[in-house]
Length: 223
Image (cartoon, rainbow, N blue to C red):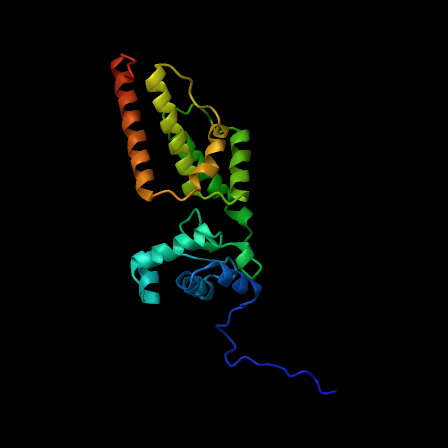
């Protein structure tokens, strides 16, 4: 019996392990989004499965418009193939990345927790020191791959609803725990227009300014 033939690469470098991860992605994505996925895989850092590049450079590299690239990225995120990391990089999730990551996710955990702390304590209605329980919840959010953007949106939405309740009833208690926003993390991960979050952020800032003015004048009025 003759030995099985051995195959040799024409190029010893620049190749990518396109196996079942590619096959899975191909069944989930449109042709345009799959082409974007392939480009990201070929250019991502092999040790991390991520790449930092903006929409306009992606559009130039792929010969697409910025709008087409944004649409493709949205599809990759919605299908659970990629996500935007806390540092703004595009990260290919483990299920679709064939290489072992040399830099475990735990190494970015402190940075993630610090960003969650900053977003949480930035709100006027929060009275907390970011306790050990808050840090533990932030770590769980990181393990569940809740993006910093989703954390920010949950805090903004919960804060806005808190202020509206205060305006409607005239009294209220401050938020003392990150757990207050727990039920909102799934809600904000739905497909929602970016314009809506811009509106929510502006509304929160306006209400906080209003509360600050009433506090400084000593009126205590929120209506």
